[in-house]
Image 1 (cartoon, helix red, strand yellow):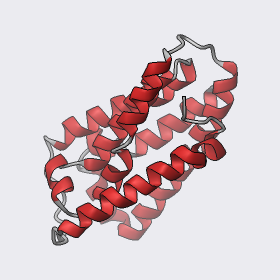
Image 2 (image 1 turned 45 degrees about the horizontal axis):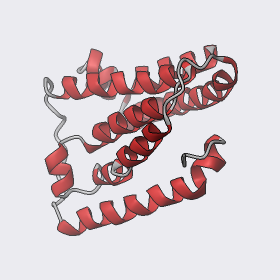
Image 3 (image 1 turned 60 degrees about the vertical axis):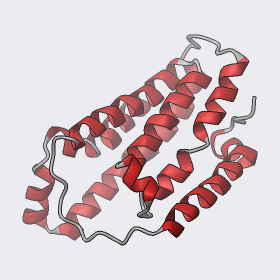
Length: 190
């Protein structure tokens, strides 16, 4: 379980700089340069992600099951997960979806985490998905209180929404029909 916890601390910690120290990122970019900052951020993110993936796999086998969700909750979870990939894609594709959700990636993470909490009852699941849900809620609240860095805005296009929905739907099907089983070792189908 220590690898899971360490991975969560590193991964979510790096991604929480904007929550706990909003000006630190800009200070470090000024001091080190953008490329060095991105390298450090990416390197720590990859290390944290690798640790949490490995740690989750180990913890799932050793930590207790806290509850057994009823079968119908797995169907609810599959329904909740349907918009997750379109929201993720919409975060990079300016359109009405992105404008409506304001922060589609955080919405996707919250939805993904909640769906997995409903469908899984293990302590490892509670730690992993609960941590991501709490982090995404905290980050969304924090974004309301900070000024975003100036970035050139890409033009909003209706085709971006179509790409997000169609591409996200295809990714959902790929994950549902085999990729989740291959990557995680568990079929998402009830």
